[in-house]
Image 1 (tube, rainbow, N blue to C red):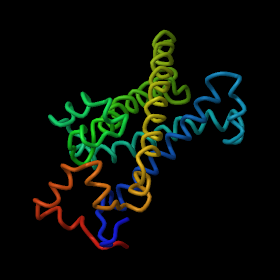
Image 2 (tube, helix red, strand yellow):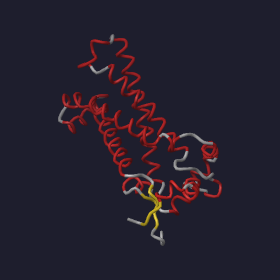
Image 3 (cartoon, one colour):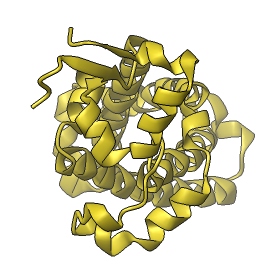
Image 4 (tube, rainbow, N blue to C red):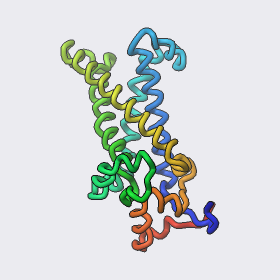
Length: 219
């Protein structure tokens, strides 16, 4: 329990809005994409008004996903740079899984797992976008040959499969680490939460006057 009433702002309103736009676009992309991937999952197209509407909407949602992830990169690339403690965090994977706090290295704003998700999506989403353009028949169908389109479909499907796995890991970790979701819905975490999961970041907040504005009273 946070008896002092003090909280730490982890994500501001713009960051949270950007994240949820990205999340919604990704889920819609997965549902519409799966409906076109195999006849067994075609029933998912009913969520978009049928097969024709699904085929028409899927690439435009992809454009929105790409634009929103560019926003994510602009806002979060600094806190996702790799540091020495991230390597130590990876090496202590057993302690992380077992929640053995005494043997988990102190990390900054994001741990190595969060950075893996961020940079994986930074690779996979542009891959999906670019290969999606190649197979977007309405606008680019005549600009590429059939063999190129077939290769693009294969790469697009593989990237989508990997992105779904990364997304599942991301969601699971957000649920597994208690109060992580609150940080992205309400924007704040308690000092105790930061001390337990991101101790180096707490030390940075205490030592850097420019970051002390993130420490506030509970809203």
